[in-house]
Amino acid sequence: MTQPSSPAASRPDLFNRVLGALMGAFVGDALALGPHWYYDLDALRRDYGPWITDYTDPQPGRYHAGLRGGQSSQAGWLLELTLRSLAERGGYDEADFCRRIDDELFSRIDGTPLCGPGGYTSQSIREAWRLRVGQRLPWGEVGGYADTTEAAERVLAIAVRDALQPARLARDVASNAALTQIDPTVLAMTVAYCAVLGLLLQGHALDESISGKLMALVRSGQLPFHTVTGAGEAVVTRDSEKPRRTAGDFASPDALLTPSNIARAAHDPDVRIEPAWKASLVYGMPCAVYHQFPAVYYLAARFGADFESAVLHAVNGGGQNQARAMLVGALCGAIGGLDAIPQRWIGGLERSAERLQWASSVARDMLAAGA
Image (cartoon, rainbow, N blue to C red; front, side, top):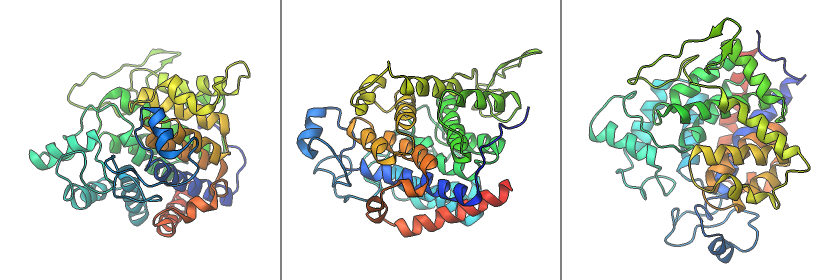
């Protein structure tokens, strides 16, 4: 079975979607910089008012204190590092990526949370730093079991670059994600999110049909998920020493079925979350992938190309709103393109001109590779 046919889309459309996805992720991250990690919603409203609409400065004593509105957290910083590597190398070059992490990040952190660019270093990065720097282990042996979306927040750039080549997308995304996170469920959900992003960039809708399109890619061997075939079940390998990141190794396709189920709920008039920011309460406010991805799919499916509404509901939901807004921003940016992102947010984003240049380079390479 071949790749699902894409809706008719011109090269300018694809180019615009690539810019929208990448800049949308940067904008979502920066919008949540100030109100990041408020689990007490009364405190969030007290510090930032009833509805956040723009970039804000972090409060003194909080995770990103000292930064200013429009700047990026470490997640945005890592996304930029990945984007620069893709642009300058013409595609995913793992050796180059790892060298940049060693030289540009690990040389600037000390394994504690409040250290390094972006004001806060995530658990998975701290664990990788301890193994890489503290124990001098090679890349490929420093991944940990943090269950967050940390890897997804950077590998979405790789998914954008490989969007027209699903098998390459799955390989490159899984390989990079496994550098810091090796739990098979985290990897499966990360690859699934990136596969959804790839289809949206091609012009497919985030609706109840998207999982069927993803499963078609599984059956054709392009996405690394185990499934039952007409000839019987494929064999799932068991090797505790290696992360599951090759075709057939993810134990089930459930991570690919979730987007359609949630999109169906988002479009069902009898299933309403009002206001939409309360998706964070329904699916969960914490950092884990099984809270974050469902809320992300819900907001992106509900608002589609209405980038502003989707991202602001992600931000105003509290908790781990930085990841929620970043991942929603990429999906809605892919749906609506760069034009869907309010210009005030592009203009107020740090290094927006440079980021647009790197994103444009990746877009050109993506189109050339997929031609």
